Image (tube, rainbow, N blue to C red):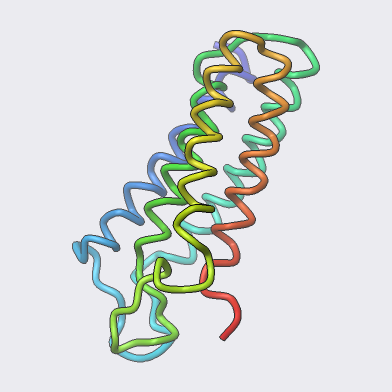
Length: 156
């Protein structure tokens, strides 16, 4: 396994792991705190790793575009990023604790979030059919997903 393949797999697994964690928070399997600002346990670490994985996915996609190379794992990265974004969208905004208000009730519209999810599937398919175009699309999708995840709950 080359370093590039290892990096692809690592980024994919981190994004899927982050999505699993965020889904567990959204389903209340992992509790959030009781006071405003009390995040779920390890949420800061998970979000930091997820944002690094988004950055890694962007770098990987740029590398795939430059080489015009097809990669199944690389093609799945934007989809994993969108899954993470959707899971985060349904977690709780700890600003409003003890009331359990979800980010989905905030400033980002459902159309935006699910539009990006559809775009991520398009980027995945394009990456397998036309690698260079798909990888460039993946860069844009990953950047927008990272932006969206970073700014959920903004504007308070």
